[in-house]
Image 1 (spheres, helix red, strand yellow):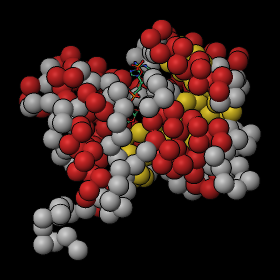
Image 2: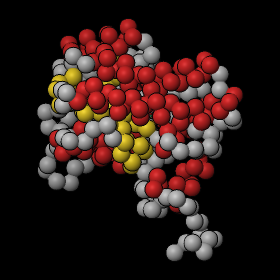
Image 3: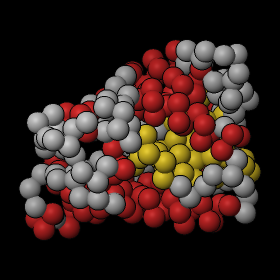
Length: 270
Ligand code: NAP
C-alpha cells in the first residue's frame, strides 16, 4: 500500500517479465508499480505458469498476460505485435528472467558444459538485448528499463558459478544498451538484489545458508524482500530517476559494502 497520495507512475505503461508465482521478485515489483498507478502487462513462458500470471494481471488492473519464451525471436516479434495491439506504447520494461541448469549452480565452474553456458547466457543475459531489439519501436522516448542482477556478477559467491558469469554479461549489456538508447532519453539500469527465497534461488546449492549469512552480516542486519526491490523499481521507473542510467543499484541491506563479516562470536562484533 502507498502511504501518501503521491503516485509516481500514473499514466505509465509497464511490461513485467518473470512472474512465475507469488514469490517471484517480479510479483513484488508488479504490486509496487500497480500501487503507484502504472498500467501493467505481463509475459509468461508457458502453460505451467499461465494461470498464476493471468490471476496476477487480473488482480493488478486487468492488463494483458502474453505468452513469450524470450529465447525465441519469433515469440519476441509476436510479443511486440501483441503489446502494440492490446496495450499500447511502453514507458517501462522489467527484465526479471534467469535460467541455469541446477548442475551449473554447484561444483566447479570448469565443469560447465558448452550447452549449459550457451543456454544460461542466452536466457539470462542476451534476452535483455533481444527484448530491447524486439520492443524498441514500441518503447516511448524517455522510457525506463530495469533488470535484476546479483552481487555474484562482480564478486565470487560460491555455487552461484555460471549465473555469476551470466549476470556479468547482463550488467555489461545494461551499460551498452544505456548508451545506445540514451539519445532517446531511454534509461537502462539494474537492481542488484540480495538473496530472496524464490524458485530460481532455490536452485543454487546452499542457498539457505547464503540467506542466513547475509541476514546476519549486512549493515541493516536483515534480509530483503521482493517488496523492497519493488520500491526501488518504482523509483527507477519514475521521473525521479530521470538522470540515472547505466547503473547497478544495490537493494541488499548494504551487504555488498562489507569487507569483513563478523559473527556473534567475534570480538569484531560491536
Ligand atoms: P523466479 O520466480 O523463478 O523468476 C524467474 C523467472 O524467469 C520465471 O518467471 C521464469 O519463468 C522466467 N524465465 C526463465 N526462462 C524464461 C524464458 N525462456 N522466457 C521467459 N521467461 C523465462 O525467480 P526470481 O528469484 O524472482 O528471479 C527473478 C530475477 O531476479 C532473475 O533475473 C534472478 O537472477 C534475479 N535475482 C534473484 C535473486 C534471488 O535471490 N531470488 C537475487 C538477485 C537477483 P518459468 O518459471 O516459467 O520458467
